[in-house]
Amino acid sequence: MSSSSPPPTIALALQQAAAQGLARIDAQILLLHALDRSEAGRAWLITHDTEPLTLAQAALWQDLCRRRLDDEPVAYLTGHKEFFGLNLQVDARVLDPRPDTETLVEWALDLMPEEQAMRVVDLGTGSGAIALALKSQRPQARVLAVDASEQALAVAQANAERLQLALEFARGSWLEPLAGERFALIVSNPPYIREDDEHMPALRHEPRQALTSGADGLDDLRAIVAQAAAHLERGGWLLMEHGWDQAQAVAALLEQSGFTRIEHRQDLSGTARCTGGQWPLAAAA
Ligand code: GLN
Image (cartoon, rainbow, N blue to C red; front, side, top):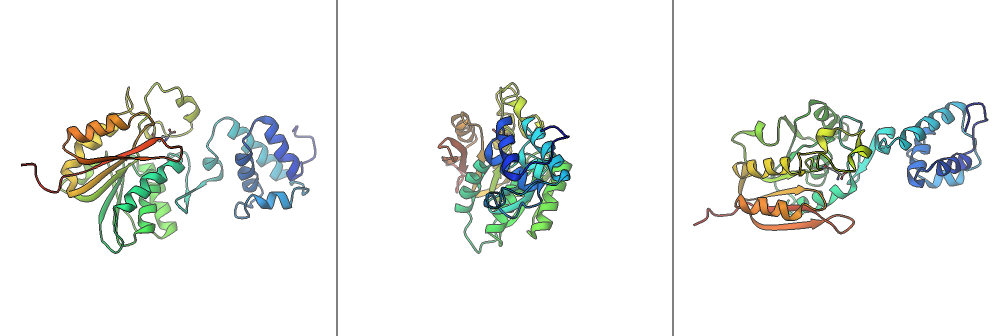
């Protein structure tokens, strides 16, 4: 669309986006955003498909398409993302929350009985997605959200405030800021991509420190497993998300550190995406 042509109708705008190679769902979400109709849902576009965009909407829409084609996550362009039924505000200060991470939330919830004031910590909370999902489902739990990035903590804090979910926050590397504290449950979706992974260029708009972790992608998972024993109550669990091919490596790390009942959980595509273990109930004889 050249800037001199009249603004397109909704139907034409979507056709033009498809011709440029935009995924249909992305185009629909971005167009609703450009029209300030995000709440309306995608069916609204169909029932209004002959309506023309205003000049300002067309200019905004054009810019959103260009940025999406340059790999910016849809969530950064709209400023929000749905995660576990919560509307989170996200931007380039934090990782774009992935639906696969809901697997980790579901596993954690299985281990969190209702009506118990369990103490839980989410390491590398980013937008606060995991911690907020747990708090929303288990209001009695005391959920602490940790991140090394002050900017990420600002995003998580703003989300907690807006959603009126009371989290506690700490800044630092994994469990380091929590000397002497013990938890019934530690959860984390840490960076786990190899530095030289071929997918990194496509993820360049997201914070690199939230994505990559050393030559084999396991540096942070190793650090978390190494620190966890000193911070778990007896019988407490450590659950981690990891890369599609890291389940065995993470299980081995847990075993070497003395964890028992090591298990995996699969993501939406059936890949073992989370691995966890229990800190033994009794000291080994
Ligand atoms: N699952 C994300 C991806 O592969 C990475 C998230 C992470 O590193 N924790 O794009």
